[in-house]
Length: 230
Ligand code: PGA
Image 1 (cartoon, rainbow, N blue to C red):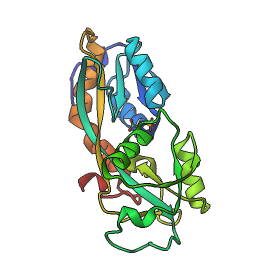
Image 2: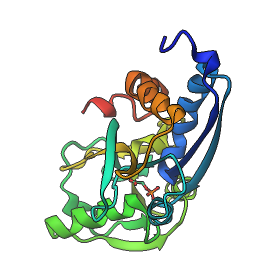
Image 3: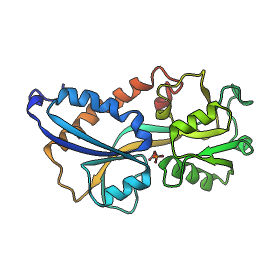
Image 4: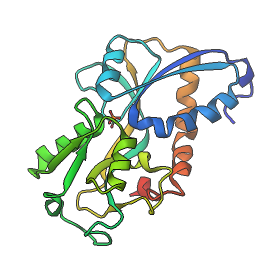
């Protein structure tokens, strides 16, 4: 384990994470707080744009993004993959088909995250780079509500595999679409000018040592099993 003197480390760790990382981040904090029982954690959640606002004002020790802003002087630590996949209702006409071209999905009603979301940012960049188009039908500000909408046949969506950690194939499926999963990473981020506290440095060490494995365990019994290795 990390430090034999872990009981002596005390203080507050202030974190802000984008909505999509709320599926795994608490599962990292559990073991961390068990190892360092005197460290307290405060934990904010919002979409990518609102987290960029907090980062600009240097409000927290760390931020978690998969698309950190490119116009700021940042320190970034990569700690786990963030693959984005196409999810569809279980009875979708292309269920079971291999190597689907994205163009085959152009008429399917698409459910999108809201402007300001990192997931939406990644999909829009993919569409811009490839020239593909989608039939955007709904915008929903919540990964959970998007999952339920896909389950009830309202359409298909692109989501991070981390949103699927407690999801089985009874609910919906991941389509085997060319170019997917879109490969992104989760980063722990802070301003380069920031002086890290001892507690914050301890958290980075913990994340680098144990983060990847803890997150992979979480996906191991879901439909997203194996996607971190693709
Ligand atoms: P989101 O961010 O929850 O705002 O979509 C996820 C990300 O940064 O990829």
